[in-house]
Image 1 (cartoon, each protein chain N blue to C red):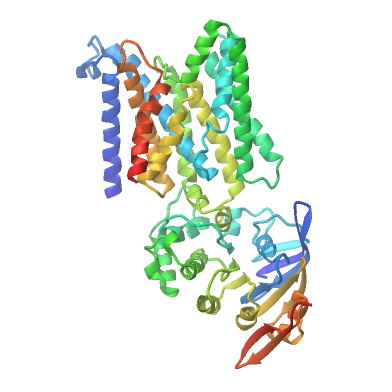
Image 2: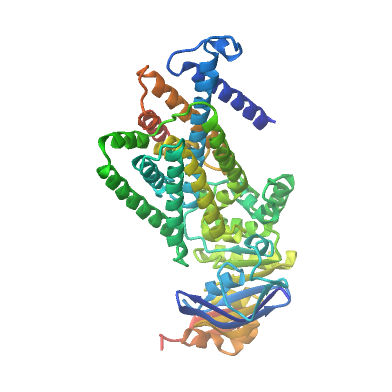
Length: 258
Length: 318
């Protein structure tokens, strides 16, 4: 079992954010977590990654119980990439990617040839070798996201969790990032869990969608099923037209808000 | 290879500089006093000058690298053991020692250490009661503790007779009043301690500089790392402060100076602080003994007077 969460609760300052979420992932794939603002998407991701304390009947990653497992060991199972809100310092990308090797290092060992080899290989895979000698503060939004995905790969974890990787990107970069994620999922056999507001992209790129509303799971299944059952309307309290054309989904609001 | 050569060259330069400071402080001694035990200046050089230069070096290194650790764990350029109440806790303890006339050898230092320890405990106790507290909680708690001890210091000084007042003021100006090797033996474990700490946690601090969330994702146990570094660094700083008094400037400016040379990589930064902070304090202490020889200036007066112009110059030229 790659991810198992049974009856997951999270409270932050006595406010219940997640109210008993069940989620299990058995096979690798690209999973999208969707839901309106404040539904608990990011909280779910953070709790699953073991970054946020939670209460549950069971919570494990790759068959290892999250509670009591060290942060460092968890980081060798799951690579968690938060939404980058603050401006990053003038650090060389190659050096930044080295940080992803931290979970593999004991207290006294230092980064070596093998680590640089993995970085170069990953950069080649993602077609971003020219970015390696740039500094983080000079990257555009799209470039930064590619570097972040590279950093998740360099960490060499079976699970990758990304919080809104396309939040500030224009449409062409959004397409690029979703395409890239689907490609590395298939080529490297990773399990990728991503939070997104772009429901259309979730339908078109993800293999499975998890929909959250007010801290509860209201849907968990394949994109086709989600489109068919009108889950999107329930999710946002609004009627949407969902069209299927040329093997792609198009979603647009049918009316003003109810 | 190039790095190793640089390291060896730096080490040689360090030894030469320290040897020069030992000869130069106050009256200039003759070079042959180093290796001729029958030389009339031999005892002065080995018994007083060298221990003092080494003590200044150790204290400077501890203060500078401790300052760097504080700046990094709090992600704040102004965070230092001094803004966070450790120095005022130590001063408070020292003053208590002076006021209570506990004149067994080392009483002032012992009380200073205890005072610093109490201030750390206070800050931690407050931080522990705020479960979702961020970095700024500890920072604020520290600043509040600093002001509290500041008030106690003023109160103690107000009550003190003139003689004690002069002693306490002199203590608070800071000074490397080391005679013989006894204090060196006390300082050495503190210096070694902070050296080991920097070696173990340099990588954690590099990652932490990118922000808490990213650091957690990369496997750095942020809260634990912060608490550990805060407690241990505070204790090592307390050791240095209890012997040399609150020489605050070194802990703030030397790390910034180091960052102007190397913007990234805590391992290099720490080496620079451990060596550079030490050299800086040894240099200013030598200057303090020489400028108005045979009178001696408190080194705390000189560190800022010498360091600030240099720092501002580097800041503008960056």
